[in-house]
Image: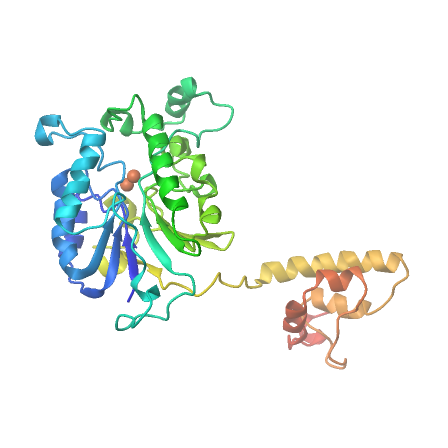
Length: 374
Ligand SMILES: [Fe+2]
Ligand SMILES: [Fe+2]
C-alpha cells in the first residue's frame, strides 16, 4: 500500500491528456493530485473520471490554474465560487479536498492492516490536503508591494494569475491567502497530540525550496513566508507540493519535501517522449525510511585531506610532530607499502578534521608510492 503523488498535469495540453490513457492499476494505493490539473471543471472531471476507479482513494488540492476564471458558466465562477464548485465536483467523485476531515493513513490505524501495508508508525500519520494561496511575501525585502509588478516585469516575469485568478469576494489575493492561513492553521493545531501530518499544498511552503531559476522573479506568486516553519511546528514527516514544475526531493530539519510536478510538454520532453502515469508518479509513503546518509565524495575527501595538511603544519609549528608522513600520503591518495596500517594521530587538530570513516577509506587505498610517481 502506497501513497503516490503527481501535480501539474495541465490537461489543457493534448500531450498531457494522453497520460490519463496509460494503463495503471493501483487498487491498494492512494493518489494525491497536487493542483494545476487544468483550468476548467471539465479538465478536473476528466482526471477524476480516469483516476478515481484505479486508486483506493484520491486526494486533490487546488492549484492556481484550477482557480482561474474561464468561459464556463458564462464566466460567473470566479474566486471563492470557482473553488467551491471544484470542491463540489471532487465530492461527487468521492475525492478528498482541503474542506474534508483529515484521514489517518490506513497503515497506521489500529487493528489489522490492509493487505500489503508496511508496518504502521508509532505516531499515526494524517493526510492533510491544504489550500494556502500566496501573499507575495516571497519577494525580496527591498521590493515594496507597490513596486512588485514593475520589478517582476523588469525581470521578464509576468504571472497570468494577475489576469485570470480572481480573489472575489476578497479584495486581493493576499487577503484570501490570509483567510486560508487562519482556517488551515486552526485545523492543523487541533489535530490530536502525537499525530504527524503529511502536508499537501500546491504552493511550496518554504522560500528556500524555490527552484525557478529560469524566471526567478515569479517567486512572489509561489507561496507565503507564513508557512516556512509549518513542517517543524506541526511535526510533518513529509511535505508534498507542486507548482514549480521541478520534480525533486529535498530535506529540511528531518522533513522530506517532495515536489511532484509533471509540467508542460516543453518542460518534460527532455525526460520523456510520451510520459505514462507510472513514469511520473512519485512515492510519498512509505518512501525512504529516513534521511539518506551523506556520503563522502572524492571532492570532500580531497578537501578534507588538504585541511588536514594545513592542520599538520599548524601542529608542527607547535612542535607536535606525530605522523607527518601519514598525512602526506592521505593527501596523495594512499600509503607506502612498507608501513603499518596507519592510525590517525590523536589529540591534534588533524584528528578533529579527519573523520574516522574517511580515514579508514583512505587507509585501504592500494596505490604504491612508485605507481604514483612520487
Ligand atoms: Fe503548473
Ligand atoms: Fe501552479
